[in-house]
Length: 400
Ligand SMILES: Cc1ncc(COP(=O)(O)O)c(C=O)c1O
Image (cartoon, rainbow, N blue to C red):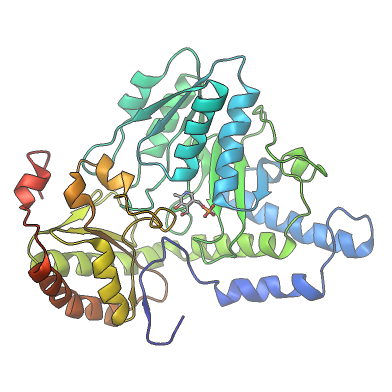
């Protein structure tokens, strides 16, 4: 990152914490062994992987052999969903998820519908982005094999009632997976308390190494691998283990969980200041996502009459990095599926900006955004042919 840059896109990715890098360093050139080799170099690498697995298992309140290391959040999600539903076809072919999941979940479900004759129920969310346990309960059928609902949304930051949904799933004996990729830094990941059977995390959102991920898989669950080969990770993820990556993932998660209470408090103060100042200083703006059940670092704000991309370009000139959609979907000009799913009309959905704060975010950074954004918006609106009203956009759904 350039020294003056104000990076407010931590939901897209985080920097590698230097403490994590330090822990990883020795596993590149010195301790480079293959954990599968039965020689002393390999055994030392295996020891490092075992230690990382134990650290993660302790954090999740799980057992080491319930942790599968993968190469990303996307891969973990694919393994969780495809792996479980394919292995449990004898029980049925119905999956439940929501309309606001990350594409890793949505596209996997669509693939299974199209090519493998699974049926998927996509639960709709309310204006705040919440799905209820009652909705889940109603959607469960005799042939439902898996529920996959995200812990926290990557765009609007809403935190779903995972524990309560897990209770419903448990009661109805349906397996429950949660995509916790956005929750690793700020939420309690105790899988017993959460009532989840499968949980996905990745390194790139928790100040860990990119290209790392994991799947918590409750003991006894039937699952098929999606990658075949050398039989690593108990046959569930073949391929030589990324030893530095695994060591880094464990260290990153350890730091996040140790520091989260203090850091959450700090971020909430900064986030709330940002939201309050923007929505009071700039007319025709409002917060997306649940006002309180949201990630401490997420502020997703709709600014009517202008394109999020245009705001981003202008903010880039001030070296402020935010996002106008999720990093993975911002390659297309379609409005975000999440913003549409919470009920915003197409013409308003284009104007949402996600600020996602992080460990290095300071009050000075927030003050700078508050200082420059009103003029950027004023300038862009002076050129805009659109003139929407908040009350029409929120159209009786729920105003705020
Ligand atoms: C909620 C959520 N799930 C899954 C992913 C995919 O993770 P990865 O990029 O590690 O494959 C992301 C990344 O943006 C995410 O935010």
